[in-house]
Length: 150
Image (cartoon, rainbow, N blue to C red):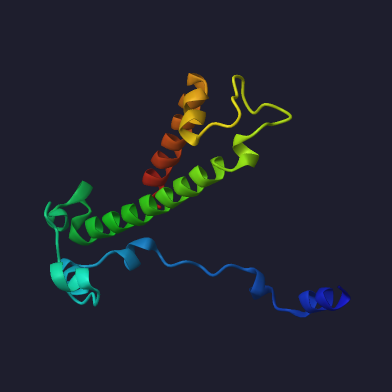
């Protein structure tokens, strides 16, 4: 323990400072030609068979006056964000299926709690006011993320 404390005292302060992340716009934005080249260079079967596929013409649109590169960056950001949300939702579903969460509790988490039910039945058992609070909170997070440019 003493060696750890000495090592922490002697190490530079830069080790405790997070590096500054580059702006998301510069990394995520690309031209349509770069996106097409990336899709066609994909070495797996789907990349070789389909190549570039944009049936809705999303790369030719101009979302909120961002321009072509800004629109591509926005779509990439949205895809990454929603993929992470889907993964978190799946993990939440798995966690709710565990006996520690779905089983008996010493203190009930909410009025009307029913033990040993599936995650879908757990959602149905939550009071309407609780569901509205969850949806409002997620909506606030979404609007904050869109407005702040994350």
